[in-house]
View 1 (cartoon, rainbow, N blue to C red):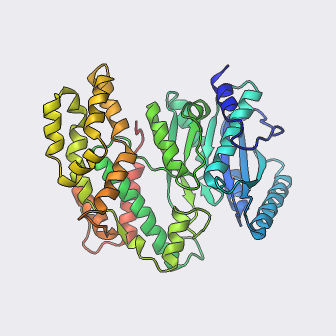
View 2 (cartoon, rainbow, N blue to C red):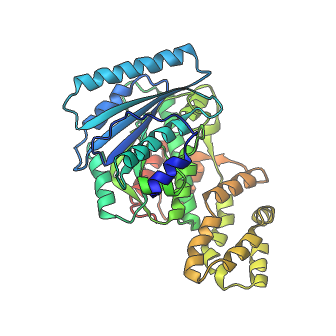
Amino acid sequence: MGLLQKYIEQQKGFGPSFPDQPISGASIFVVIPCYNEPDIVTTLNSIASCYPPHSGVSVLVVVNDADNSSDEVVARNRMTIAVMWQWKLDHPLAFFDLIVIYARALPQKWAGVGWARKIGMDEVVRQLVKNDRNDAIIVSFDADSTVMPNYLQAIESAFDRNPNCDFFTIHFEHLIDLQGITSDIREGIIRYELHMRYFRNAMLWIGYPHAIHTVGSSFAVKATSYVKQGGMNRRKAGEDFYFLHKLILLGQYGNISSTTVFPAARESDRVPFGTGAALKKWIDGSADLNFTYSLEPFFHLKPLFVLAPQFWQMNSEELDNFIGNLHPSLHSFCISMNTLQEITELKKNCSNSKVFGKRIFHLLNAFWILKYINFAHEKPVHQAELRTESARLLQILNIQTDNDISLENLLYIFRNLDKNVENCG
């Protein structure tokens, strides 16, 4: 039994399948979860305006709702489906096949963006098996996003030039200058995106080698790599973070900065956290987006991450002394997480220093870092003002800024930093 076939056999019972969906020889599949979406046409028009790649393309839109969804949501979903069928009739020469999947009345315990994304991606794998295909590119996208015209060509080229890469993240920028955007929404999305970029660059600064953005609308993965790591999860939010950091364990990945995805800047109650939820809280009066994680915990982490690959050469006493001399907060966290014992066990299971140097960051990973940051902020360290910490990090990176630099200009600087990331792993 092949890799893809085995995966599909394992997924029986995890959700509906759609046996009559065509594949039409596509090698690039764009999967779009769609829930209570008022403007799917803008997204379809954006993809249709792309320069066609050499490979065939299929766009799978997974319209979904839960068994407890309101009548209003169900009606909106049905309207969205009708609009897409009309769009398909109106665009007979579109270079991609538009496939509409209606995953209706999903059990509310799991219903959400993660499961919808999984349904679409699993359907791609199932169709590859059905048509005796060995692999394809699965592109993760969102129903409220648009793209640069070279989007699909850039993705195709990245995989062609880097055949050993399992996945690519894709540069993104929220649209902050759209006509009609309110000043409150504009400031909120600038703050939200700045926090994301500040956090990624802070992780990179401490020496964590897998500091990537995990945005559901902005990555592409090989189907074979998708199934090797067990496929997408069914989380209601944060599914992209968990999925991509599992993919990192495969070892080969990169970042595409030659094109850009533009997620919408709008408030939403579709997911419990993320862009839309953060903006909704901001509009409702929350001050959360004024703040971000303090840099102090990152200062605690930097000695650990800089020296982590050298733990291979340390004996038990030296390793114990090193952990004991970390910042008291980080030392306490390492004790609570049994970090010393796990490092010792990891050393036993690695054949040489090169293997250990890679696997130590599978142990001290993004989940571990985030847990410590939250742990530290429950102690004497508190969240700090976003503008202050962002400018402070730039200063540490030897990028000088004016004392009164705006949030918007800070965001532009961090965007340029992130655009320079090509090969992450």
